[in-house]
Image (cartoon, rainbow, N blue to C red; front, top):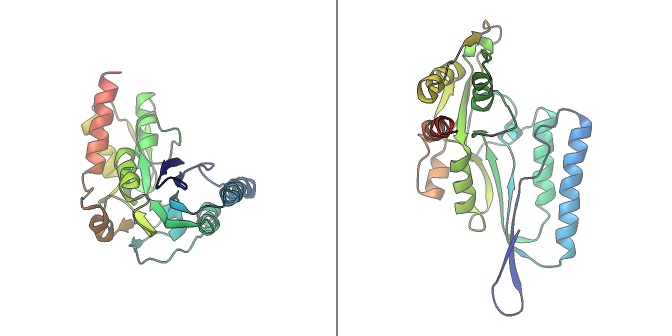
Amino acid sequence: FSSRRRHTRYPLVTGVQTCALPISRNLLDMEINLLLAFNMVEEISSWQIELEGFTYISSDAVYGGNNQLISVDTKPYAQDLHGAMHLSRESIFGQIQTEKFLVLRPCALFGLGDTHNSYGPNKFINQAMNGLPVTLLNGGLDVRDHLWIVDFAKIVLDLHSSVSGYHPIASGRAISFLELANKMALILQIPFNLSISPQTNEISVRTFDVRSLELLTGYTLGNSLECGLTDISHKILHF
């Protein structure tokens, strides 16, 4: 939270909420994450002030299944505990008195030093740097969007306290995990020993229509993946 003076008597307070267990894999994880939200809302309510802005960092998991084009008009439909947890927290934080209530629902984020180790750039980097095979599931044919954490942070700073609503956040350029791994090997210039499991399931595709986001921010993020990987490459070389 940050505070500055609007005038002599009343503080101007804003908040961005990111705190949560990374993934709600079971009911206990979900309960902990909901309690975090309840406690924060209770504390903020005790201040008896209206915030200038409050931003909640949710997840694209609220949109449920795959094989869909997600836009600002897509209705959430959580199909697992993780998505249900974030959708519930959106409602909980929506009880906060604030001039601007913003919910951001990002696709998979990546960056050097990420401890989440989720399937995609974060996991592939950790596997390659530790001399392990880079494992690709379902033939590496599933398609996803990947956004560099630096670009996401810029979006948060640009939209917080100035925009309200519920917005999916992505680069707008989704690629297969096989294409991702090959691109990473080329840019990072570290050995990528691919271990590709055969395709056993229907190819899963999740893409984003980011035209609404581009209108809000005034810029595009189509090169977010390349920029992020290039930055990581420079840091690895100078580590």
